Picture: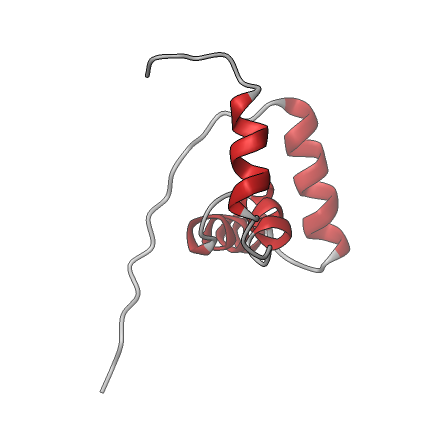
Length: 83
């Protein structure tokens, strides 16, 4: 069975400093420009959330439950607000 992969050419605008860094990293890793951008885009779209969210989830995702008495005391110091 023969398999065909569609390839779409595209033109994008990238700030010069980002382009230079991408060129440097692609060359350093022995990748063509196209290979580098495909890998970067695949990594970006496969990541759930951004790096900051991922890091925060790593820190706070494993926290044990807060004692309700301490939580209520902390919340009582906040000024009332309407959402």
